[in-house]
Length: 103
Image (cartoon, rainbow, N blue to C red; front, side, top):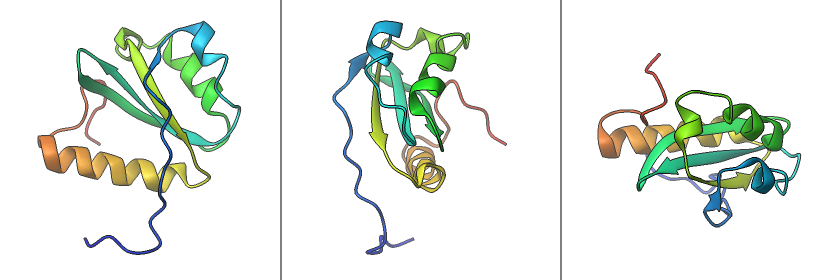
């Protein structure tokens, strides 16, 4: 699929430590996030309402909680953008990130 002019350009945060203190600095806004450990993406997630709450929930997930760092971007179209990121990841690596299952 060709990139079209309607695709949103995201502004990603720097990679941040994945801990409760750092998560508290994240806005309560819609957006998406990438989690990684040892230079590997573990999870690509999103929230249509409150990215901070979603990140806090990730702390209790047995797989995602292994992440050491995360990066986030605020966007109202997080579902659509997440699908684009997952498709790009799947195309590049021929699989989904470690903490994600194929549907």
